[in-house]
Image (cartoon, rainbow, N blue to C red; front, side, top):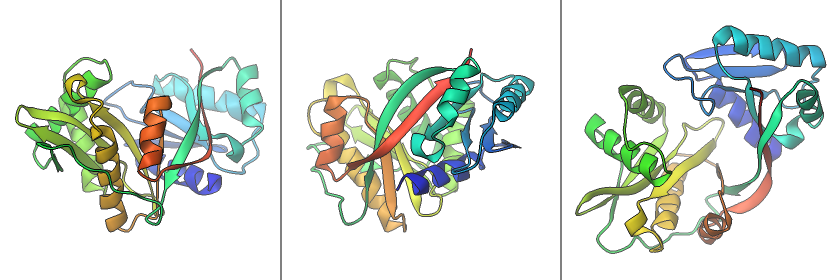
Length: 249
């Protein structure tokens, strides 16, 4: 499973507006944002990595004007972490990821008064982005770049899902465009006043169901804490491996 997830990460990075193949690494950049969560690199699974390769990676990020950063499944390059630490990188986080298949997925009841719909206009996309930003403690705004990126992912086979109540958008999430039958689900967020009602689980389950209906074989995600971990397990996600987030200032 680790190998398949890491391969999908590599494939997805290769869809960025600017892609660099740097020795055993693939780096994806978006010129419209300097966010390190969008501009990062990942190793080719199983490829040998040297200290010189890491130096080349750092130089490539400097040339692109971006912070050197990597995300990857740890077992896909077990020797890489020490090389990165020796080069001045620092661990941001270690997460366990969970996977779901059509056979393990489970439906979750949508709370009364909520509709789950895919935004098909930029106005609706903006409302979803604003709601999710606010749910994650970020500025409640949606730039043209944010909207275009979401639209582009939808056009490539990804999925955005908004939870609508009488007052507008109150939550949602997204699935990335599938790569080799694998899709990452992320950004599941719910407005404060609608939490603790099962909405996060319902959104996750519905995103997975719709992606499986489009031919996806494996959906995966990461849980941000014990509460979300339990939510995802209830709708069919199971622990499968570990990922590392690491960067250098």
